[in-house]
Image (cartoon, rainbow, N blue to C red; front, side):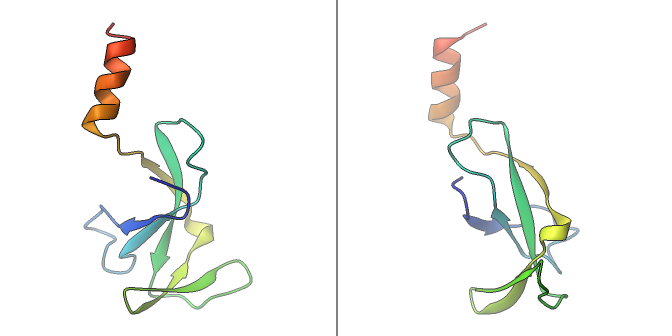
Length: 87
């Protein structure tokens, strides 16, 4: 996941009003989680929140609702981690 990548919200509970999330944290940091903000369809943009369009939907980057998401790791990445440190 790279900085500013947009991906579908994995939470069924909030997907109706926040169909996407955007990665805000730099992809150069090797952490297990990444800072994300929801892209919501029930707010107006403000000086803190930014209007965007994704797949034809008008959404707002809700910076005040930031949180973290577990960073997806590919099978190859997990194997390489295990290979270098199997214990």
